[in-house]
Image (cartoon, rainbow, N blue to C red; front, side, top):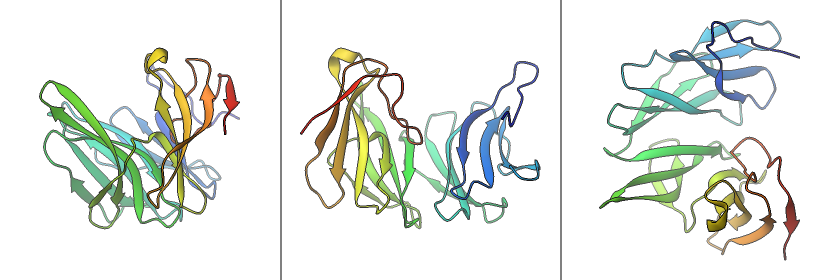
Length: 212
């Protein structure tokens, strides 16, 4: 069933849904809103963006009590913004200037975010995968960059897409990696350039074949 309708050419972006299915989170025009599916009530849960700012990568915590989203500043540095589900208790973690962040998944225990951080190294932008602590923003660098990654239900593994050069960054191999420091391994080989896994959705519109 249709939940929201775009109006005057202005749509809805970056949708997320709470684990209990009660709430939908989305970005519209210049702020983030929370929609209660049972009652149809909607409330704004972020401050409006300023000139040159962007909001995105929103998620609801596994226990359904918090939200997080990325606020990109005009200089493309990144703030991670946390709030309680009712919009109270706002807290902001500022990353170092020039560092960009993409958020992929929230750990089942609620303590960490799976993310990719990137910054310029000379003329090249270099990305690395990290586990980012919700409590204080400290990071643990991972030996792989988890594009579109998701935690396993027990929080011990991550599945993610590894770009394949001949697919021109439009898809890749689906990888499985252990967070105990073990090596990554291929779970499936992407055979079509539309293969992708972006955080909250399984790969669609592609051909996959299992590998050992």
